[in-house]
Image (cartoon, rainbow, N blue to C red):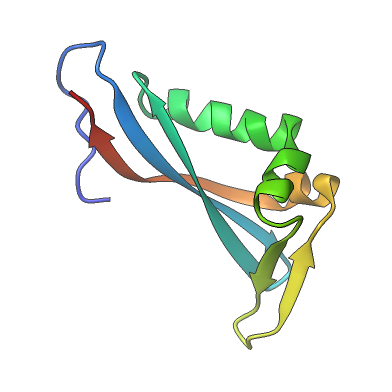
Length: 101
């Protein structure tokens, strides 16, 4: 992300794009989530993590019931089990932010 402005007055509503990375062995896959809020940083990431922990079935349903992971060799595997989805989350990153007026 090129710019993440912490300065300025609150409340300020912005749209965050958050990239979630899942990994099983050498197989890696990502999905994106959008969250509009007047929070920043960890206050954005925690609700996304909570959503994965508390509603993994809904996340899988939004992606056709499975998330595909790919190895560097091009081999694929899928995560279609809610518990495995929770256990395979390895990274949560804000990749874009757009301030709303």
